Length: 251
Image (cartoon, rainbow, N blue to C red; front, side, top):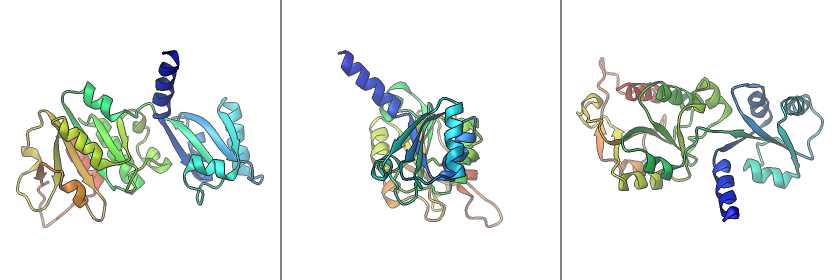
């Protein structure tokens, strides 16, 4: 029984860890006092370099654990051997929430789901607007590029640590699970006349924000219950995805 409880506790802790990689990204994260750094991972093969020395100094000064690995071991942690540059950093993300727990613990909500939004500046600004507005959580899919990077953390101006974030390996499967629990899914479209201001916000609502160039994917669009539009003047057809998120957050 005790072993089972320990396993669940460790699994829950691991689910709240985000790993970033690359020397500039890791050093910037370690220098940022708003980021809760958990463990620094270094490759044994790293040559002496000022950036590495600075990382080690910061970790030792702040009692952050340092672990050394061979190249293969580090690549398993970074999941990107070509770009990790021999370093990776585990960051504590207390704002990460499990999708099943969120569904079980929330009767009504408004969620923004990012379908392939790739620009870290946009991701950070979306999180900031969501945190300031009436959004209860954000769904981020690791597939398609909607991931949290140091640039996204910086653009969020620290709000990423306050905003509940549901990470998923499959946005489609996660949205199906929410639909099975009576959530309504909205996508933005130019081929509808229903304004975003005219929808009923009671209940469980999820708004999909699509890729900066291609919009919402067909797979996700097929899950949509209703299309809405943000009416615009003077022939303007679309808005930046982060601006759209702001409008939805303050409905």
